[in-house]
Length: 392
Image (tube, rainbow, N blue to C red; front, side):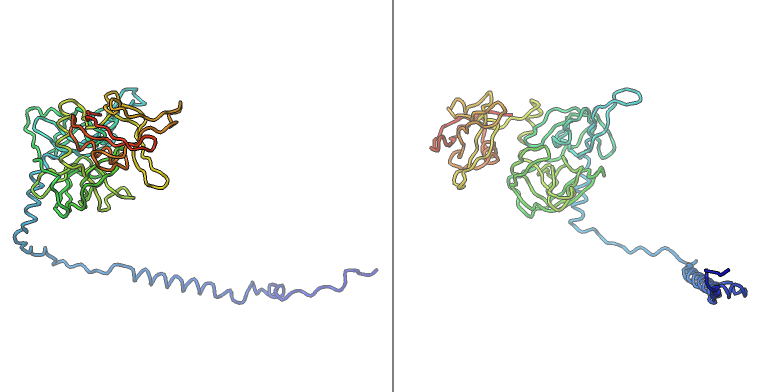
């Protein structure tokens, strides 16, 4: 009987080594040596990392070097802050909500801003957007006295609001009021407020620009705004901007920054505007501005750019524009323009190209004053005299 499997195979070298008790690779002895070397190296490194004893048991406090007198401008800044800060407050906005567990109504803090005492009777001014949509408010002074506050009224157009507190017989410090119409670029400025909730913070800079037009946080256009490089951050809104004499020259309201924090350009409502609007709010709870009584204004311009102006949708209830014969636009059921009405292009000889210019120009006049309104109707220029009325 033959064996078809062929001749028997010879065992491999690895099998022969194992049969002789070789037990694996001839380099197996290197592993313990490598581990020993690794332990030695790590131990040496750990030894080098051990802190050396560099302490000195004879160490003593260093002698104080006398500073000398403060510089004159430092003294002036310190005095300004010491005088003004007691009149600067933190305004906390609460919104009413319901406790999910107790089902009781509760006031939840929504944010904080700044403000300052307008007069000793307890009137405090701040930004409109600081109190917007709040149900309850508190005012906190530098000495940590806290008062409940009621909203007297506000003016969204100028981002202004007035609060009233009961000082309970305590004398309230009020800041002196300056002027903004004669400010000069380069004047020193000082801002006091509560940025990021940090109480009583002082920053300084200069007037870096004047007569700016900008959109406020409340969504309105602010005119004649003071620009400063004094750091203004979230929480500074409503605080005073002071000159080097400690007088209010504006109310800090917003910043220009892609990141939302100070980038060296802050804006303040000019104090001349405050001094005009705040007494109105205290008297009546609202502010009125000179206008002709048109609403729904839209900027228009021709394709060649030669004609620019303002078209309006409808008349306000107390409109002198309607009495003067101006024609509003016609709207469809969706409230869109079906026919463009008269286009306002001038006021008293001054060219008007946008609603910002129209509002600013009219607001610079007094209620009851007569102005000439220039407008286009069917491409033809016309003019009409109108008496300015108070608009809200």
